[in-house]
Amino acid sequence: MKQLLCFCLLFISAQAFSQLPDFTDLVEQASPAVVNISTTQKPSGRFGGQMDIPQNIPDFLRHFIPQQPRGNPRGHSQERASLGSGFIVSKDGYVLTNNHVIEGADHIFVRLNDRRELEAKLIGYDPSSDLALLKVEANNLPTVEVGNSEKLKVGEWVVAIGSPFGFDYSVTAGIVSAKGRSLPNENYVPFIQTDVAINPGNSGGPLFNLEGEVVGINSQIYTRSGGFMGLSFAIPMNVAMEVVSQLKENGVVSRGWLGVAIQEVDKNLAESFGLSKAAGALVSQVVQNGPAAAAGLQSGDIITEFNGSDVVLSSDLPHLVGRVRPGTKSHLKVIRNGKSKRLSVIIGELPQDDNILASNRMPQQSRQINRLGIEVIGLTASQKKQFDTQGVLVKSVSQGPGANAGLINGDVITMIFSEIIRDVDDFERVVKQVPSGRYVPMQIVRRGTPMFITLRVND
Image (tube, rainbow, N blue to C red):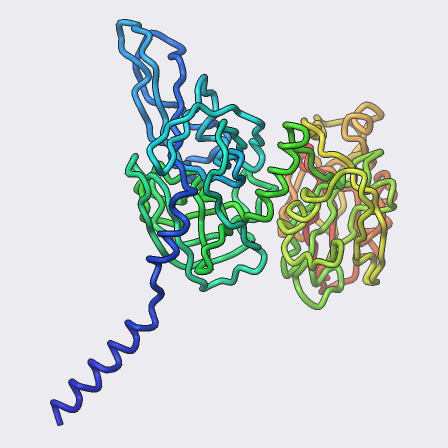
């Protein structure tokens, strides 16, 4: 009986092992198109130190840039080198990598699989997607096969090839653990999340599916150790190739812009707006004279669909809009006052700088609204101009529904239950009409940022 049991276990183990993927053919075919990238940069100061990490990267998200000494205390003209990865996307020498690999470089060098080292020309770069396009002077180069990243499925096997710690053509494998991830300060890239072991030097390297197609570009890691013990994030290849196309044509990337501020729809907000589930992007502000304003989009609208794609999370919308070429007509589905509505909008071009509304101080006459437990005052003419809105300013918050909703001193209340608040009289009238025992939406402006919160009055 024991022998039979052992035989069964060995048979099951052998069968399970046989189902694991074999990456040998993939690596053999794909490796020639993967390159090592090094850069040199003249030191900017006399004293040694460590290479700067880009300032827009949060502490817990570390790009995998090998940190090299800047120089020496004596001020010698020693140059520093950074190492990263990349891959060839055309036979005539176009190479794709991460922007942070080549950022600030005076010279960029690409080392090929056959050990040739060529100096590369920077065609263009895009910090928003962390991509850079290079060009080397060579012909008939081996190229990767570009895949469709939208067809990638969670749980699918993927393989990374790169130069971690400078070790060329190192191969690691894992699975896709999530898709469409949004990261802080990265609004326009729906990252592919994997558990593939990624380390410093893998930046810019390709992520392959089992068909040997590049589906992503390894870009960031979430780690507490600084190494591969964490989550890896790759830029989807569909996004990357759109960037490549624009960099080839213009050297720069332009992105679509809707002209709205949005926020997540949580359970309470969904209930307050009469939705059956928490989904969509809630419009908290419409930029004056922007594309959304011209299309008739209003504050309080909930965008649930963009060009036929569902908007489940608010972070889905920037990904979708950013990929649309400016000047293109797009279609929205919104929920307004509980009813579905379709709008058409001509997408604008994303401005270089976002203008955020200014905040302000306190004014005059105030009234106590006992039902909410807050004291409000009207906005002065200068405050209305500064906030670019009408409404009432919260002067004090006592215990009650207002405090429970999260109101704080200095908030500007602009809308309650789809009713515009222009002054204190409007506020008093609307608050008296707020139904008891259910959540209703309240729009406020806090420190220059419009947002919705939920209010519940239990009389």
